[in-house]
Length: 264
Image (cartoon, one colour):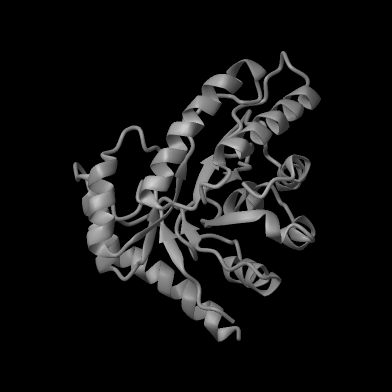
């Protein structure tokens, strides 16, 4: 079985009060990571990130497609697609293979069927923007019971249905083991026949959305199922640390890696 390659989300990990974002890249590299990810690009110095990542030999796994507006509403489509063009340029500059797309909230004034149709049309147009760029869009389902009440896409299965309807290589799904577990989704059923649609993975434990091992999700078992099914991408560590500093992140990564290797 392949070794797991982890990608810390530097919005929460390796962060210190008042620090400059590139210093988090340096800390992650010192801790032995070879890749990292983050959320918004518009509030960061992309030139500094590019320079620091290159100096540290770090890859960028992914970032969020902006703007964060409800694309369940057709009225927002043109604005979001223009933002996607800029986001894709940034991703290409960083050699990041994934842009993360959020749908926005469920809109009571529009039927769920029409909102889903709007998403399919928007992502179909997004595929045309991304074609040939080497960047894929990862649609992200989020849980609505704890962290994102009112969010439209709370079902991984429905996310796969949207990806299937678009039917373009540029469009896939970000599979977040934390959000899926909060929504009580059975991984075997959800992933059956759908693994090729997964462009990236996120992990955190539940309850709390904290480091692996702090809650009750068997993340090692879920990662093993993904790897055995053929997933070979990076695994994003997107969790809120209970203790700050680099050492707890290193320990969390090593515990996951060791437990995974012991199972084979």
